[in-house]
Length: 483
Image (cartoon, rainbow, N blue to C red):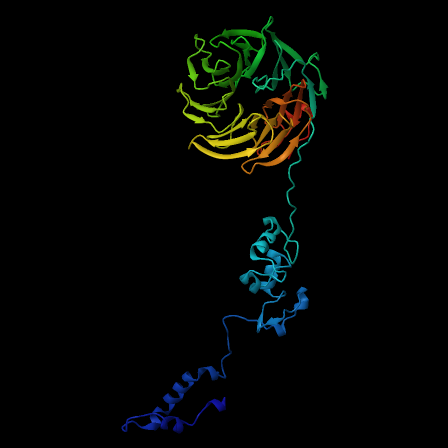
């Protein structure tokens, strides 16, 4: 420390002091000032030196201890593959990541532009640490959830002789009590889905019950279960609607009002809506003595599709006039009118997940599934399926829907909404898949076609909150659960 000290006299001689001030009296003060001015060179011999942080030196670091290689320096700075910045780029974007200069200029050594580079470096979120990565260090690795496996073949086939090949009819429905109703010719048959374990069945098996035979020249054009209870509505070729107690196999009443066949039925609590070839929709309250309480007019051709929304506030109707109309509880004229389809609209489905979301499908000349927001009266999206759309049904367990098709592929498609990516395409029917119903547990669908078969498919998963299979549906059929 001696080299830092100076002669007091020499220091004081450099100060401009008044004559009256004695130089020796300021010598100590001068030393203290000099030490402050030159503090970076002065260290007290009696006090240790502390710092606010530790900056390691690469030359003194043991990289081999951690399995790392010392990084080369570029322009005096560490920025190679072994540095923290280099390792971070490798983990996030892979080992072939261009250097920073290449990213800024937009060119890599292989002359790829920046847009191509960004596309190639996209990776799934679960590939990043701490979930794991393909290259470079990682904390842990977690398996990526595989997509759900949907069986491509029907697990049960039911023989259905005389099942009509008519696009405008609705001859299959599945009740909340797990009973399937099917109209065959002039008869309606009931099949208890919980009682059968056989793979192939015929209507002569003991599990099948004949509910009624309309007889004569009459035929069944539509069937529809009440939302609760055991009441089944039957629309006939003569324009009448019959209400049957399926538990007692007894007809309760017959209601008129239509002049031509009734091909579409839809329940909303105690209100039954019926659509006919006479272009009318009749609202019937089964508690009333009157055959119908109101008449809805708006279609210019046969009404072939009817669906109430899940909150029972809106009724959607589709017709052979290529129109999709929406009615409220009290209107006799449509409150919304959609005219984008270019073929008959039979396929209609309300989303159980989003209020006001409606899907509709068009016939052979249209082939599109269209989505609408009836709350805001907005046209959302359109998907060309390349086949006649015969039916639509939304899963109540997940945000997916299934469509059945006719000309020319006769396929069944499971879609993921809203991306409308195909989860599965199911084939097996040799005619148009004109009929569709969903099991009460929401996991199984049944489809019917002019090939006179009903086929059962396991397409949707169980509810997320459901720990085990319910007593209906999957368990009763002896199926494995889709996860």
